[in-house]
Image (cartoon, rainbow, N blue to C red; front, side, top):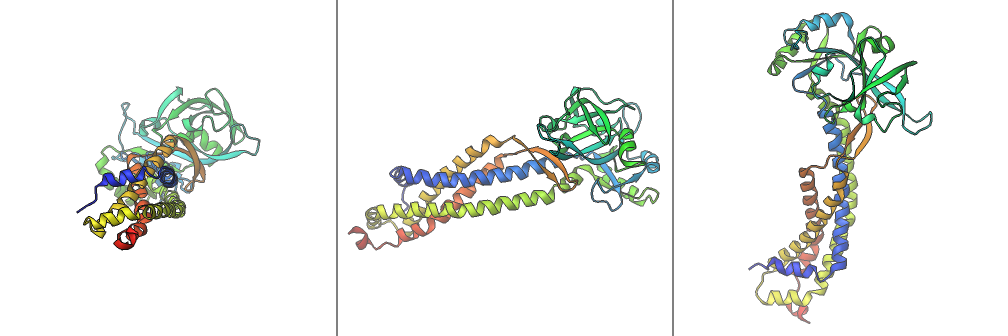
Length: 388
């Protein structure tokens, strides 16, 4: 015979202060847990959204990042003739040879030494067709042959001289900011784009760092990869763009997840002890009730299950409190260093339904752990001793 759950719900209301404090302690742990994982999710999502399954990224053979790659100019004409590259409405291949460099620009409102690394990407006029997630929200595209640049939307408000109409100076040259663009929240929004020929003259001489192109048939990636690998004239490796940028997020993403688990595990110890104290107090104050339950024929295991359920209910409400505390950070923009390029990348905290569910499950587990020993003690109370 099982003890009705309503008994535990009514018992919880008899100790409002201790119950509320225990739930709040668990809630704070859950809030930190959700916030840390939302940070990792946001960073990973930003890089995952950067690539497209329809695009291919070519790097120098053996290079593991755009920054360490280099493709000679004479290889571009060979790559452009590949039958695997899609063509635009004008019949030209949808290909963008790109320069990739990290520059220092000044932060908003900071002194002359308040600078940060930002990616400057030189692209071709076809880049906006190859990367279909790029949308210009203010201004116009940069003109060919001009010192003009477009800036990602997440640079605004964080760096100086990045608004449309401003003049940004880097590499001993003035650049006119002519547009601002979004990229579905991807890492492109933390970059500065300009014409590749203009950037090459300033940064990289006579080579490109990578080549991005649209596949004519997305299912032909493996055939295209083998074809480029077999061509010894160009010495490049082909990567599906979505997979390449997703892999770039793995190291820091795993570190952020590890920190989330480590920090919340330490905090969880305190929350569990809070649950232990609350449930021990409940057992002490309800000793005669437990004796009556045992006298009425309820089995010790039912008493134990009842107190475990009560602890889980308190923790469940604590989990809801924690999720509510964490919800406001969803969409809040922050930044960190992308270890693949040593540049700053801005991204938004990403609180998902799955993450909220994980937080509630984590809370209930803490409640069950904290309530186990008090529940076990309640189930083993001698009836005669309890009735005194």
